[in-house]
Image (cartoon, rainbow, N blue to C red):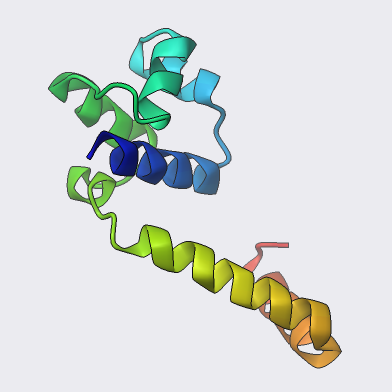
Length: 103
C-alpha cells in the first residue's frame, strides 16, 4: 500500500510540475520525509494527507486511485512508440496539445 501510494503521489506531483521540496514545504515537513513517502518507505499522517490533497489540488480519494498506475506506463510506452514511428500521428498530437495550450 505504501509503495502504491508513493507512486501515485509522484505521478500527481509530476503532473502539477512540483518538486518534492516544494510539496514538503507546502505541507510543512522535511523534504527527506516527503521523499520517504514517495519511495514507499513511510506513510503520511492523516492531517498531511489532507494537506497533500490540497497542494496537488485533488480529492483525497484520488490519492488512493492506484489502478491507472500500471496502465499509465503501458499507455506512455505505446504513445512514444507511435510518435517515434509515425510522422502524421506526431503532427496530430502536436496540434492537439497546442490547441489545448499544453505546448
